[in-house]
Length: 155
Image (cartoon, rainbow, N blue to C red; front, side, top):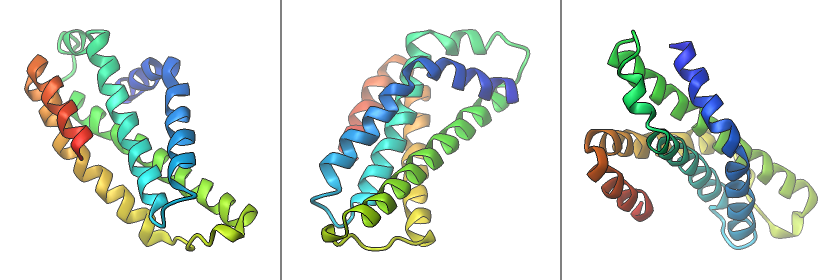
């Protein structure tokens, strides 16, 4: 299963700049204007990372290749969810770090001090979204891609 996780990160390596772009754009859009910006930036970045990873899998037809490997489907699904958890923690913790830097450098924005509970709420919300998104995406095949994309943008 470790090799499946490694494969996900290797495939995503060429698109890491996109995740950084998500983080910068959402930070610039939400931090100056919203009290709940840490939630928005963290959730959008984390969920955008999960969506990017699933789209790259479909684009490269990795799902067709994975089912031919000598690993069970159970391990493949576990690896997908574990990589989604890693993306979630990256997005939420990066958002928290950016907000702490903003609090230090721009105290006039009067951003609230966030706690571990705020991080846990953001992680929980992303995990709920992922638990709905991933089965829709992979379960409905080609039709699921369009349906899950509509769901993800409406959420």
